[in-house]
Length: 102
Image (tube, rainbow, N blue to C red; front, side, top):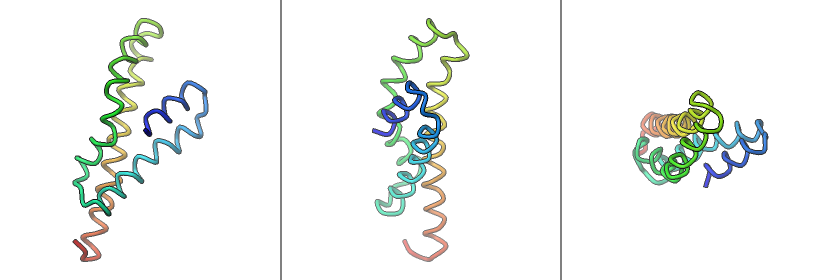
């Protein structure tokens, strides 16, 4: 769901919303680790898995239209979203272990 919001923000040129939506990956990753007890990598993968089919469609289409460097935005954005979700989950995991809760 978050990827579709990112997708819409990019195509409509709403860059401040793009930043907010990408940061929502960190919040969702932290929430999934803290409340659900998932591992950060598993949570990050679950959050970006919906973007994979769209990226497989957008990347080749964008290469033909905008060139290779500009088309790398799509897989790069998925990688950044995964990294931010992982970082949010990892932060929640470290915070949980420091407070002594498991």
